Amino acid sequence: MGGGGAIHRWIANREFETVEVDIGGETHEVTVKVASDVDGEVYDVSAEYDEAAAVASKMGFPV
Image (cartoon, rainbow, N blue to C red; front, side, top):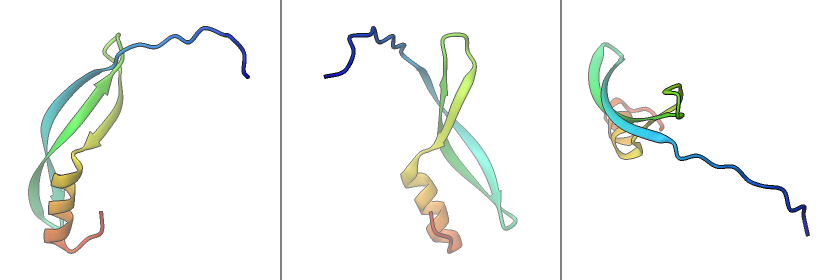
């Protein structure tokens, strides 16, 4: 089954931040998860789904 090569993994640093987003002239606060590598380089920013869904519902947009 498959080769026996080594797999190297590292643990991402994750922080939560609150950001303001302007949608249709209204400002909303949403928590985002910021993932960075060991050198501090950000490689992913993801909104917390429940908060994004609440804003989308209020504004009449799909998530």
